[in-house]
Image (cartoon, rainbow over all chains, first blue to last red; front, side, top):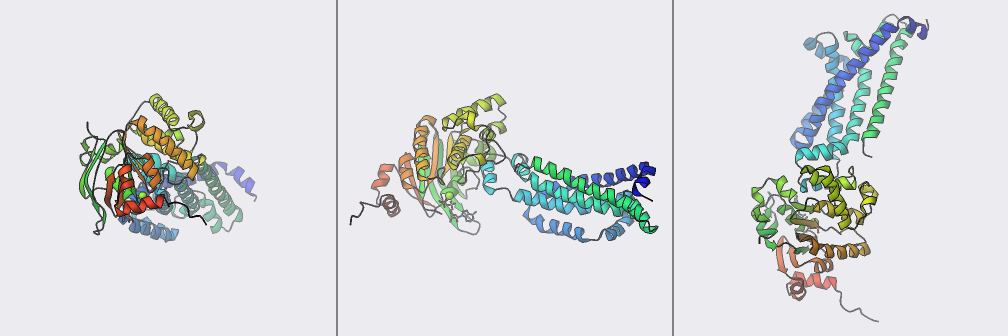
Length: 207
Length: 250
Ligand SMILES: Nc1ncnc2c1ncn2[C@@H]1O[C@H](COP(=O)(O)OP(=O)(O)OP(=O)(O)O)[C@@H](O)[C@H]1O
Ligand SMILES: [Mg+2]
């Protein structure tokens, strides 16, 4: 059975799975940005938090995804919430790390000039540090999103839906077309997210 | 009349116990330029940072236009003091106009007033407003950046200016050009200015008074003429470095 005829007969299901996939990635990445960017900023202000926070995020990053699902299922049960939580955990490290390095990389002379002119810490952050670090922060968000698209395919194993549903079903029934039916749009999603965020990154970064 | 700046017994000791600035006192009136001269590491930059509280003094008192600096919120204090740091530090993502208009913007001036002020200041520092407002710092030469830095420090019309080697990284010709222009500006501005340099000739040309720093202390304080005539060893060392004496003919 060809891929195209499979899609034409299952288009509603395909769109549903793509939507679920995008939803998993968008919600988790959004939450990771809301937590990770402020945390990254906090690390630039509190030297003592740096090693423990980055160390912990690093440890999370190295846990294999199926193992992480295993740890989270007792807490959140089977389904989307476990997958979203795992995706947030993976997305945090690149976002925190890039926010921190982006701001730490701002020319100290620029920061000192701002402080010397009477900018408050909030003004310095909002008007100078975040805009100058925007490119690096967005690069972190881009990495987090692309990784997330990949990890989200495994979410199907714990009932979170998404394009992994076709892949796992195809593996179980040894059906190459079904595997491809999930893998191809997942790969395209990752490439698309990478291209779009890369574009935003170039637009927003001042250089 | 209250002086633009009064510094009494200023001192700064590092937590480890090292003395970076010790017992520095001077007064700068409106229209006066105190030149802080001294070797590298003598404490000139540190003294400026103690005045605007980028560093907190461990001894002594600073009065800006008669008000105790220690009694003001640091950000409020700094908005009353124009400051050009040694590295200029223009914001690379802001145009020239936004760089210059930063403090007025923080002080919530209306946009037209900021634009008019930017125009006025660019003209004052010898840059054509039409050609420069929309440029970014990376599109400026070193000398133009220095000028924009000075204009930015003047933006909110502070009574006191702190300039840390503002002509430091320039070629000798541009440097002399800026020094001449600055000399013309001093009188017109009517502000108290503290001007840091390690260049004796620049100091003697621009200063109404010279303060010579040595190892964190003020080794000499007096007029340029008194400085030329001084027998204080560090002053003599600086004078002879500026004037190598008659050329030896072979
Ligand atoms: N944060 C700091 N911690 C420790 N030492 C410092 C600190 N800042 C400055 N110093 C030291 O204080 C001394 C005075 O430094 P300062 O920057 O005031 O010198 P300066 O006169 O401005 O020199 P230059 O002409 O090279 O700019 C130097 O010996 C410097 O190494
Ligand atoms: Mg210095």
